[in-house]
Length: 277
Image: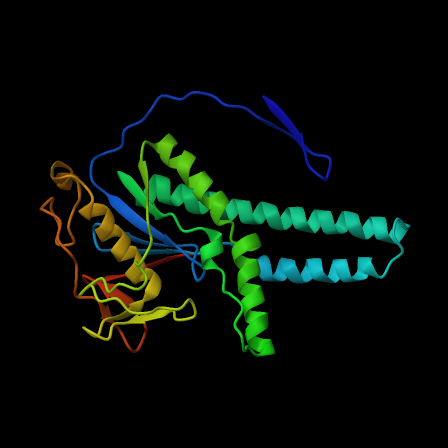
């Protein structure tokens, strides 16, 4: 058993124990694309999308922390006011961290226990690949947006912690967790296979070959699902349902529409599901 102590003087104990392995029912594969607009965008073998948002209160907490830090910097070090503001800063930072961890626990629990029946597929994308690089000629507004987005990737989204939570929760629920390469999934059209450049600032995929218009995260999630199923051996295809229903041999899915009035993506007459915390 390991004992740890945080900055607030609270003690925590962690230990490892063995639990009997559980086996879930056959069928039910969900592929998730980890991103910035949403924490995870999923696509299931039933043709349904899942958009799971992460912690949304980070902007407010960051502003509060900046105000406290600004006041503390004007004080003399080790003074009474300096020490009091340091305690307040630690308390607010811990509150933000706990709320962030709570949202990640809820998201990983939802995926492992409710959305996936048999397997979960995620990308091997690292945080370094998701940051925007500095451009040669950028305006102060563009530089500020890039800095805010990169800070969100490294500090506020918690992708590494989310993957760690999802790993042990899938193991506890008896679900298989597969990690596949995400290379080219955002650039490839899920309908015709055409590849085109997709910088990070482009959030909508518009195929120049077949005219497909859809969110880039949705397109990437479908490509990840197709890549995972294509890599399965022939005897494993029985457990994967196609969008038409039943346990037939897997085939690629098309017919994605965009409603211009409400901008709700419809797949096989099913509206996408938005999940927020």
